[in-house]
Length: 115
Image (tube, rainbow, N blue to C red; front, side):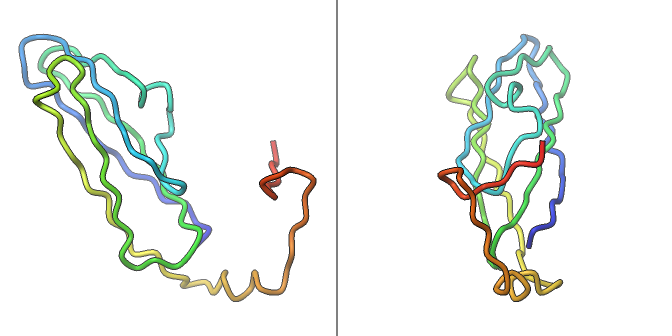
């Protein structure tokens, strides 16, 4: 909980033609580190592209599972699906610790950005 982990998702174009690929999913805790590439990426023939994913769990969920659709925009009949699974446990007792604090912000989503 509150700790980020990164992983790679490699998409390989096995055909002799270039293809356009997009990743589609909706998640608050899972993101593609380069969002521009998630929208659309062209992969050369017989080559691969690696997407870097980051997951930052915010609550305990030992059975987290999210499906990512890898859309082949050149051939929609060849869309692929990837399941991301995570065992989100609170090993550092962050949830218990956060009960003693309250964050108030003027921002409507009660978020504080340290940019």
